[in-house]
Image (cartoon, rainbow, N blue to C red):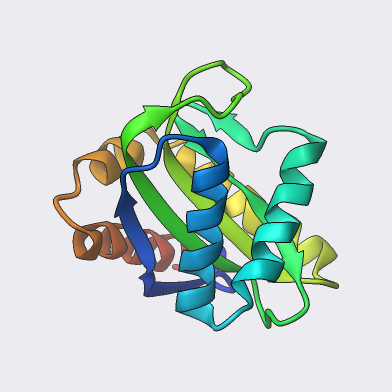
Length: 153
């Protein structure tokens, strides 16, 4: 994964949510709490991006993403849902893993690199299974942190 992608332990959450709007709301809240950004601005920007087309990536993963003025570098939130939900994903599979991304407003290539890094991570079947099996948020954070360190080497 891209070493410029911020990952905070507070940005990992397990949740019981039953709709895409609730997922976007929770993603904005987690990003705001972990990185000090404005939750309302993040939610508005996530919803605007989602209106352009679903960020349901496939394989049970969604990558809702946006840009915001108060962000210094691309920042990741991971939310694992207790029960998969419909996210209008490309492969029509319900989604249980949300990788929320917020980047600086002017982060053109940097934002795309962060999306690519998340995409690579979520194409790894073993990693997806380990995240699905993680007993708590600390274990999920450790998995992601180890992935960051491995890919940076």
